[in-house]
Length: 161
Image (cartoon, rainbow, N blue to C red):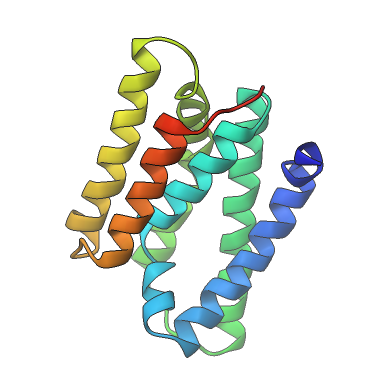
């Protein structure tokens, strides 16, 4: 079952759906739209997908396809709804999506044995916290929840590979 959920095709389809949902949340809700515009929620989602993928290569492909699928439909829905978007936002999220395979590799490594994986895990949490503070004027209540979940998945959850 986990292999079907974490397949490249299902990750791409999930990305397409998340792109539509994210844009609709931006249009129709304030809090959820803000939350899903934050980097930390996507760090959490990408990390969870990565650590539960069977191999580092699958983690890299899965997270990349999720991110690209999301960007495609998000900006299609922006266009169809005559929404506002800025060039730097598109560039920033595209660069982020293109870097996700590298981030997924390190996130996958975070569940391995040894000191280096623990350092990676700490780095992931620090990046999530700092992105909330430096890029999005946080932290907000949901930032604490997101980062608590990130700590749980990185340090306490068990992964069968």
